[in-house]
Length: 204
Ligand SMILES: [Mg+2]
Image 1 (spheres, rainbow, N blue to C red):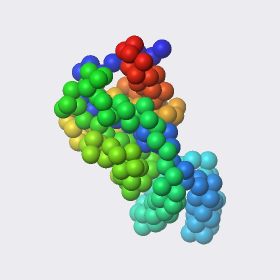
Image 2: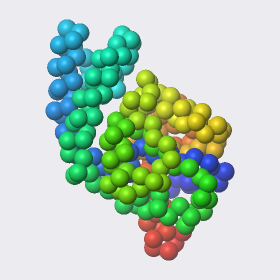
Image 3: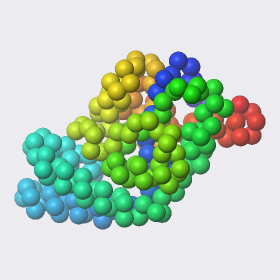
Image 4: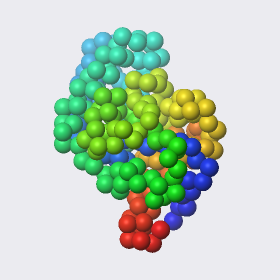
């Protein structure tokens, strides 16, 4: 099992979807809508294998207005089913009981997510941990998305900490790659979930 250590860490960062909660947005329809919109505007096809890839094209075109419009559409679809958001109990337990894991009070929690800020904030409210998350970096806050290191580096800059003082948890290979690209330690949330379950059973 992967050995996670919080020793010397000052900022603990989480992805949102699949890590703290499971969103239930209609991603298929969202993708179709964005594909159509893109074709309408640029009269060309965009490869929507990943939404970020297509947004990359818009950034390249320096079309900030279109980009903001795309953010609005993404936000709309994310928020449509936000009330059906499911909680990942172990992660939320960890955030609520950090002292049990030897994490001091002054250690900050942050979220780095590809979801829009509103969706992140509302998800955290549903999970009732919005007061415990100190910083949110969402879709609108960077122009190069995971696995680019920009989000993590923005968090580093905000706290003026070293990379060694940060640790990132996510549910996808893309998250681990983000950590690697930033030079920041990253783990699958499953590893943290195992740790939480161990503690709950009294074996930590
Ligand atoms: Mg995720």
